[in-house]
Image (tube, rainbow, N blue to C red; front, side, top):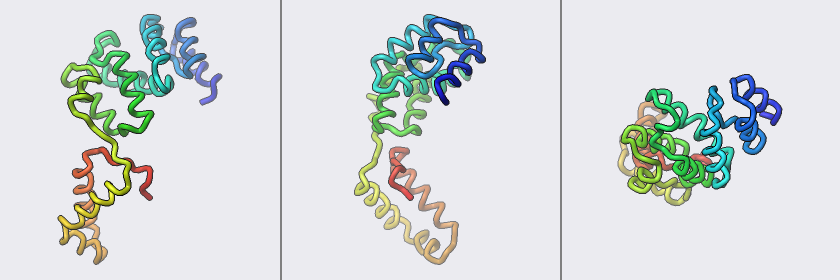
Length: 182
């Protein structure tokens, strides 16, 4: 979306002038809710300035956090995830240390347990696997553990492929990075 389109979208969504315009101008996203909550905008701006990618902070806040707040019937101030937690989540996702799938799982845990992102992240220590050698090792292990399904796939039967994919997913627990897969 071009800068003008973002501003137009923010205005059409009912954002107020001032704090929301600042978010559009500085970070490429409206940072207030439809009520134009300047307090949220100020907290967002402070958090975004600390992040590696303010746009990623906006994306996490406006999509992942807002969706979970709405589902739980909570206001922004009641979120178990602090702005510092949102910055941490955004920075980890931006750097590729966690995948979007892991990010969503961690945020789900935050809301389910009422704990901030840092606490859940430190407890679970999820890691993104992008080392092709490690991924190849997992694939070799899945193949070795499922000779019947490998034989089915070799004969062109599709039933075995699903089992192998499922076993691979279980082995990586959402930590695989698919950027190198073709």
